[in-house]
Image (cartoon, rainbow, N blue to C red; front, top):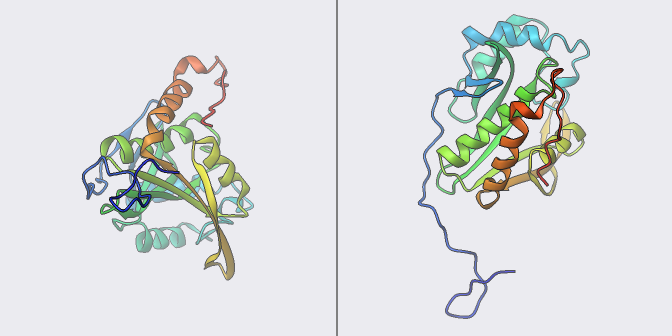
Length: 231
């Protein structure tokens, strides 16, 4: 439903409240309480990332990604040099206490419409399901909405990737639907599940992240007192 109509009485979308186009994401660091998110640097980050990922001896973290697992550091570094140094996708490394433990990218960057996607998310076992992992996602969202003024932030994943679907909902994304056989990768079809956050939702979600990330929300053993609930 809409409250907006043109002179012909036809329903139309709400008028824009921002100026377009929006700026492109800068290659600058984002600092949080529990992690730092830096533009990916293969020379500085490849070895530590490969080591962190090697803790997943079965290679489960690579199943729903377009590449990997990699046989050795040389193969991983070659892929990184060929893939991770563009402006779109713009890859970032997530560091905890100075150690690279995962990556994520801002991608499908559309300044003309103020739309941006987070993707290529790959957390090592040491990063997965930690405060730092949640904060890294929050920092990238903050860049998109608070710093750059984008109006839509997207998350897409293989529709069969249940952990990714759960993560999107936990972080406050809204499920929008599934595009059947949207792409192919690793010799197979992929149905793609779409999720989004829009700018009118961000103030509420930001407050939820701030409350959850507050040190007072964690006990002496680092266990959360209250869950992140962004529904």
